[in-house]
Length: 631
Image 1 (cartoon, helix red, strand yellow):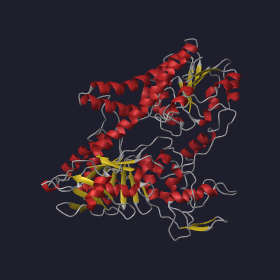
Image 2: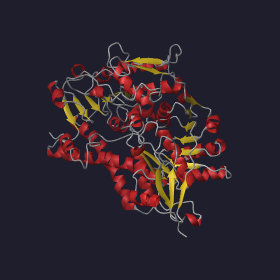
Image 3: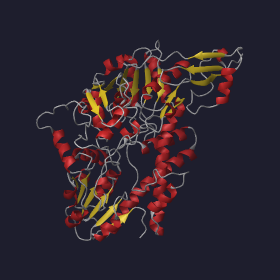
Image 4: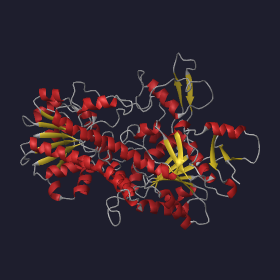
């Protein structure tokens, strides 16, 4: 007998109960529903109301058991995803202990120091608050209904360590945040994802996780990986039941903290069993402390895993599309920035990811497109695979076109010439150098036998740049021509050309040389934070207080509330302190008049990111080539 079953989620008091049809065949004993888990879209409201109000007959309403509170979370992997995500969860959930573990002891030591291994705007302060705790303080804002607000001291709840087994044992929820690079050997070489690290992490989790722990797949993975994780757990712990969730990240490096603070959506994929839905409710409660529940989407695991791959592929597709248009612009005499602005004004398209450049880099876009194309080929969909790989073909073409243009305009020879490279990180706002456009372009330019290629990036330490070039090109003849500069003046001195490859604000050539401060959370009404109630303000409300206080005279812009505890004291002659000091000193805005005086006469600026005012540079005597600008 078919019995429609209505599931009412009662996760926490702070969440609104939601209703979803789970199965049309509950009486048959099937625990797997015919549809996806509860969707945030609120499908079939009329049907829900009808089910609730229908006279009692054989229908059954099943209430999910209240999800137990999450008290301890463990992140396996302290990289670009695990570290920032763990920090934000700990920051917004002061009652949850968040352990971040990694086998790389140097990385863990960096997370426990003043010199974080990842450079993201606002991340250092958030880590300090969650890792070190805060002081008790009182906020006084005269003229408001409740001028005095007391902020109690906050205990530390973010721990970085190499204690893998102990941290996993204590956790109610374990996030897998390990690297899943493109496989470079055997079946699927150059296309499929290498899941070796994920398999090893899952095996360790299976060995130490307590019964009932929720396992969260955070790494970007091929479709079906949640099932693989479940199989590994079952092989090692056949007597124990674990629920595996998919919770992909949608972070843009350089703005990761802002993305985590105000996400477009949080995606949770689960199995459609009752225990799977309950696990999804538990994870949703963690994010709901600062993310509106209408932005938390629940789907099945396959949908979640595929969404992540397709999201990156479609973002890369837009970049390749506008880059293809830039080639047309250069031939036709059009201006790609004008075309982009006109396209972006169309509400159906929008302005994002329509900025032409020398191509995209980084660890995600290329890897995920290759993974998606490999999946399509495995499913006997060659046309689909070819469509997505064409995005990478255009990206490679754009980079090679830029290189050939530079060589041609330098009289088709680089012998005896010095070239300056401005920007090595794959994008601005981060120190991530993985698969950067610059490293490929440097290798292509070095093949033309220049006297020197001087590389400068205001956000990357010289040793990081050199290590990535050595790892990628693996050619000592190229390395002999590459010099890593600690400042832009050194890089351009005696150069014949500058290639701008990263969109750092410091490189902009305008008469306005000020750099605006990034605001992670915009100002809103302070009434919630200053309500006069006994309720402790949330961290989001405290940020509003800080934004207000930072505009006042005598306020410390880094700590306007004076909450922060003293920083960890570094050892004498700390190399990281010396490196950070050099980086901070070289983050001054590039003075292009000085650049003109240091470079050879009639030198070129090849603007691969359209960041400079070409007319201004031409007035200084430069010859300028910009992406997508017809002559």
